[in-house]
Structures are given as structure tokens and as C-alpha cells.
Image: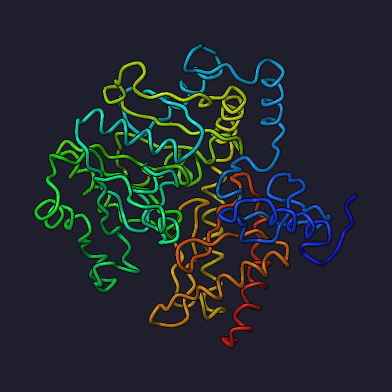
Length: 447
């Protein structure tokens, strides 16, 4: 029985949280005291009957919103036929149709081939295996600030937070991390204007890494997020991405685009790489692909995905129910929601820019993004001191004020709502965000 309460979480939610803490792995302790009951579109309700605006979308997963009727209908129809048959051994139409659709929207001119799996981490693992198999090389270049997953291979590529790697022993060998283009916080300690005029991150690969540490002829792939997600929603300069493409072309290296968070219409195009005007060799996809059902995909140029039978496989990848959900999701995104992401993203960016002068933590901060993948980095002063404590406090206050919003990087707030979100819902969510930020800043003595 649901009992509405102004306390968030209410008694029913508190009881579930207490049970969770007794039985679940300590590594899976949620950051936010919200206990989901049901959702519709960009709104959700907790088990005590309180309503919330969802600016998080399950970490950019619920692309079509919660429980879109066409996705639910597709899942129901497939569930009444069969739940599983294992694409490693047998054929089924819904898997082929999804692969055909993904190949048709691949961000390169060459014909594509597709491998379906269960998650973003799996797609990254498979993409690196494919690059190593195709090139016959061992080494991989990744970036500081990157998040590619938590399985050992994907974790070895991740360079986001120490806690994600600490205590797990030696990582997979052959991974080299380099700085990612971010003029606001240049890892080469250069001034923002100088970095914007000429980024030296790609130069570092050619002039330092390749000359002192690893031969380019031994590098299988450079893996990059076209927009860093966990790293703080950092949008790189287009010239930097072009330089990476040039390095790959020069040395026969595969360029892997990790579009797990940025892909499938979130930026107003199918893939964030399309904003950079660059074609990758391999694409990793997952999160928003099936509106919440677990699925991932590797999309590669046909001549690259030429590995033989048995070289890579998966029991649950391409699950028929997830494939059905993905097909419905892609149809909705193509029909309406990709354009909506572009339109509402501009509106949201403009609205956040208007808040800068009213909020001390935003005044010298960074607001950056494309479509509905937007980050607002909160800082304390002109020196850009990260306001992590204020960001964290704001997120908890947002729960109390009826808003789900996630952090990223050291002190960034990420705005990644469902792609179907309406203007009116954005306005309500923004007001709840501002109320929460105002209270956090006031508690910190900044107002």
C-alpha cells in the first residue's frame, strides 16, 4: 500500500533501503535515497507515492522515457513467442532485423557488420579484441577521464577514478593513458586560451608516447568517448578528434568510438562522432539502445569484422526481448526523439547559461554539451576550485525537492533526461534544480 508523504524517502522506501543494506554487495551501494515504484515518460514515482522529474534516465538509458507503450508492446509481443534461443547456435529474425538497422545507421560509409552483446562493458571488451585480432597488435591507447566499464579489460582502459581500479591487482597489459582535450582543465597545465588555439594532447601521442614508450606499429587501437561521460561530460574540440583520426590512418591503428553513453540519438544525431565529422572504425553502443533492457552492440567496418567462427561469442547477447525493445526504441528515436533531443538540448543549455549569474558555483563554471548530454561543472571561485561538496549536497537536496539528477567528474552535474522530455517538464525540473542548488550554496555560506 502506497502512503503519500512529504518525507523522501518515506517509511516504505526507508524499509527497502534498510533491507538492501543488509543483503546487497557493498560495492553496489546507491548514492541516492530514491526507491522506484513506477515511471511514465520523464516522470517517476517512489514507493511512498512521491513524484519526481527524471533528469538522469537511469544513466542515459531510458531514451524513450519510462514504459513507452510501443516499447512495452514490443516486449510483450516477443515475450509471448520465445524468451531465449542463443544466437551463438541458432538464427532468429528479430536479431537479424536489429543488426540490419544498426548497420544502416553506422557512422561510416563502408558496409557494417554487427555483434550483439549485453552491456557497454561487453561491447568495449569485444571491440578491443576485434582490433587486436584484425591488426595483430597488442597495445591500446585510452584517455585520462575515460570510463569504459568495470570488467577487467574495460577497467584497464578506464581512467576516471582511483576507487574503480584500486585493489584489483594488475590491469590488462598494453594499455597506455594519455590526456584528453579539455581546455577548461588542461592536463598539460596550459592556459585555456592557448589550449583552445592549439591542443597538444594529440601531439603528446606522436611526440612523447610513440617516441619514448611504445612504437606506433604495436598499437592496435585508440579508444575514445566522443564526449566523455563519467569524466564530466567533456566535449572535445573537433580538431583534436581529427588529429586522432589522422594518427590512426598514418599508423594503421583502429579508432574505436565508445558511444555507450553518447550514442543512439542522445546528442541530436545517431552518434556523437557525427558532430565531429569523423568516421571511426569500430563503434561501441549500449545504454540507450533498448530503453532499459540490457543490450550492447559492436558495429564495425565489414572488412575489420572478419574474424572466424568461434573467435568471439555470447550466450545472452542479442536476447530476443532486448532486440524487440531496441527496434521499437530506434524507430521512436528516428521518428521524433532525436530531433527533440537537439531542440530541447539547445533550450536546456540556454536556460543553464541564464543561471550562471545567480549562482556563485556556476559563475566561473563550465556548461558544455550537445543535445541532451549536458554537464554543468560547479566551482567555488575564479581559480575553478571544484565544488564537489556543494554538488553532492545539491544532488541529495534534489531528491527532497522531487528531482533525479546525477553527478559526473569531480564536480559536474549531468543533465541526461529521456530524449522524449517535454519543454514543460524541463522547466519544472530546472526550477527544482535551482531550488536545490540555492539551498546547497546557502548552506555552504556562498549566498
